[in-house]
Length: 100
Image (cartoon, rainbow, N blue to C red; front, side):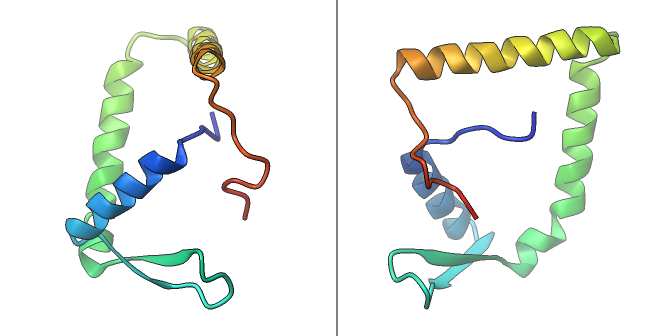
């Protein structure tokens, strides 16, 4: 899956937590005063490889013994489950949300 939806309020909380932990800094966006530019700190950059390794090990463990066709079915089921819950909770991505 290449994309998933995160509600804007969750993004705000996550950014605040990352900033508090010293993982990101932010500065005003000169082109749009309503937004901020986010930058990883040296500390964040120093742990990138460790985080990638942990993610790869976790994914490998979770998918151990599952063949490719089962992985495809699993992915399709997760997508469908996500669509079901977002429909039930009336969560909709605004047209311009998260567009680059």
